[in-house]
Length: 593
Image (cartoon, rainbow, N blue to C red):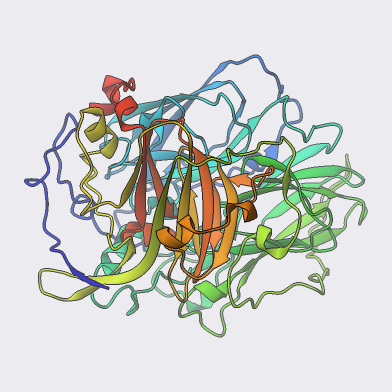
């Protein structure tokens, strides 16, 4: 695929719908800088607040709603998650960022002060934002970016959801610079009950890390030669668990480097723990395991499930979440076991043969009143672990049961459908040079961040199909989205905003609209199928997801490999455009200042 488009500043071609006027081309609006700190690097040092990984057993889980307010300051700081010092973007000086913990029915208010030098937007991953599409946090789609030096308030009610979520920047790929953190919603309706099914809760945040800032990497990817002479998304410099990785400092000569200690998760013997696992990576699909501790999988994204009871190795796609219950009856006070997150290298180009694909942490048994030991584990990986897969895949494709505990059957009558085919290709710049991009239905997304699509439709306008592939579902009902991963060598994680979808079918190859219409729909799983918001679709395969079009808005459908998203891999699902005109959007959302 080869298309021609010029990379010119488009401020004159598209008027701003925000109350301020900046360049509308996202790359023109963001300064480019590498990660190595200079003499002007921020003096503030990033902290890793270990308290966010332990959920308090005294948090009151109730159906009485309250309003919870969080005050955040976005800033630049100097940090070293893997030991290599670089500039980072952080919230309240910490990485990972602050924990948001609330109950179903609560209203969440987040006051954001942007003290960075670039615009910002925060997305609440998995929250459907019913009635508050403007708070979805995607510059160019649902809001204008929060300008440097300005404030903005997100306010939304989590009315009908509970489970494990997370938040992250949705501006370029700046989540890769440190803007991310956990978001946990409790509920008395949760089938997994504290005190009955488990005693305590821990959060494990999986991630990846680059030594260069994301804007510098994206700028290189938008050139003929790409980043480090490759147009492929980069191999991470480090793999992280709970914000910590270990880099070989002997290879670092241009900045400070300190060899890190492995992150630790303390547990009490003879207890049970609900582990909330979140993959916040920009590029890495993981396989997660804990030596000698089988995983009882109890939730996928925000859907409580009856899953495999004694899983040894859990595949977890980018931006997905799983809850697993473990029993700490294997060891005694002082015992230690490795936690492993093994990278699926099958979908990442240019991985060196010497690259260590496994991030490690330590699960340490510490009895009440005891001092924690410090020796490293002597435990070994599960004998049936497989870390050399030829594709990256989701748990539901392995033949295990993943039955939602709160049953919901999708409608069997579908009122609309659309086919979305994703593929890598090239466009030419003004010098007629080929630049790698990702496409939906032959269109690569161009983000006019100061003309949000939601505002365009709110004002009675329409979307430009030459810059954004989009499907329109005008009325309420069931709609099928056929997602084709037509890339021959890449397995993609696809995330849909504004919806928890039903997974009704998967298949190999490419499914056209004609072939879809001819399918025997009796083969679809419409009896309490798995529901989630992010799905890994392996190369040359498709999935059919079914949504209920009762949430008016402009909802991104995109690959959650951040580097792919940054070079065009986003489409839009427009639900009830007429109703969008009736949405209440606060004046502050269009007048960020």
